[in-house]
Length: 132
Image (cartoon, rainbow, N blue to C red; front, side, top):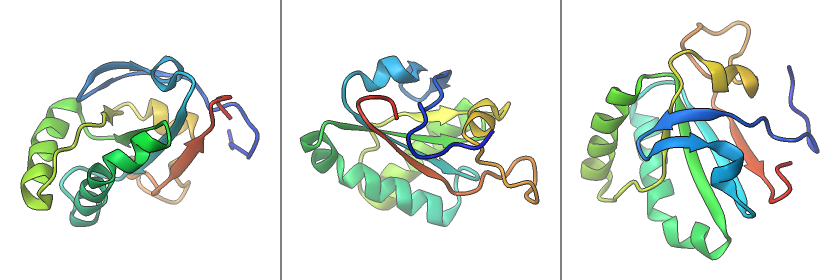
């Protein structure tokens, strides 16, 4: 499946650092940013999530909710979130979705055919209030 501009963003339910997330319900009538990371604890991903956390007020002004997704399991995300908070001098308050079965990665076509099955290609999706 390949997503294109104007397509309805696939809905899903997933476990996250903030509890169970039903994606479309979680977004409500606002905007959403869904971005993927190949693995927890990688230096680039750690700084990206840290910077995103620092922009919390800017996203709130724009009625935008942010969610990160990684194919690592939920228990790893909790430790990683602590590491991000400590090393990036921030407080990550947006959900980090666990996708160890690659369900979200598959729905959003995040895994490049030539990449390993664990690695997600760095993807970012901006979803409008209409879920497109």
